[in-house]
Length: 115
Image (cartoon, rainbow, N blue to C red; front, side, top):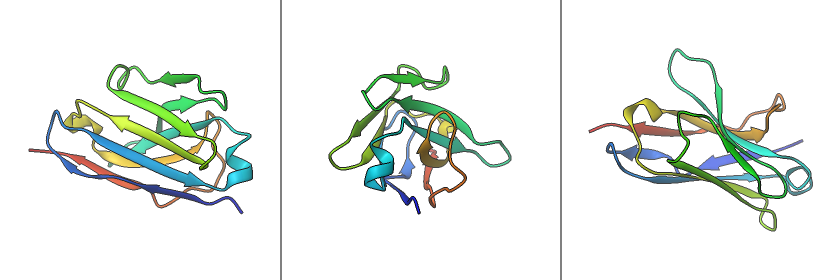
C-alpha cells in the first residue's frame, strides 16, 4: 500500500514563503512523476505543479514563477517551495502521482495565507 505523508504547511502572511514536503513509499516514488495538488474550500482539487522522474517540471499558470517543485529520489521525497504567497493560495495541499493520481491520498497539509 502506497503511503503519502505531507508536511510543512502553516499560517503565513501575504508575500511570505513556505516549503512543503511529501514522503512516499520508495519503490513506487522512484518510477512515477509526482505532483502537488491543492483543494480550497468549496472547490475541486487541482494540480498545481508536477515533476518527472528526471526532474522536468510544469506548473499551473496560477503559480508559475512563484512555486518551485523538486524531488529527492534518494529520500523518496517531493518538495514544493512557495514564494510570494497570496490569499488565493489558501488550501489543503496534497502530493500524489501526476498527472493521473492514484485513489489513495495522504492527510494533506493546510496552507493559510492571511494577514
